[in-house]
Image 1: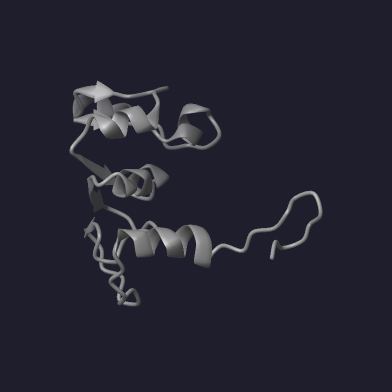
Image 2: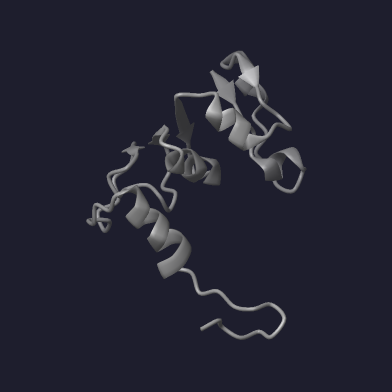
Length: 115
């Protein structure tokens, strides 16, 4: 088992270091490229990490212990049910919803929304 600490925890920007993880994991993957790590594993277990979304996009099996935005749509193995998520998009539909349809982008220079 490989444990990848959250980047904000590694940088000291928020609490959450799990010193006890060393007793349960074969490898602590600190300060590594997350995409290289995803490419070397068969599945990812996560609570809320964006790394899980990156792995889902790359066709990896994802088990969610928390409720990240990409869980509950039938594409991940979820330990908690979220009743309000009834739709069952395919991966391309979820990517479209998360990156194109839902966000409201704006130009940081002009402060205007693009057309």
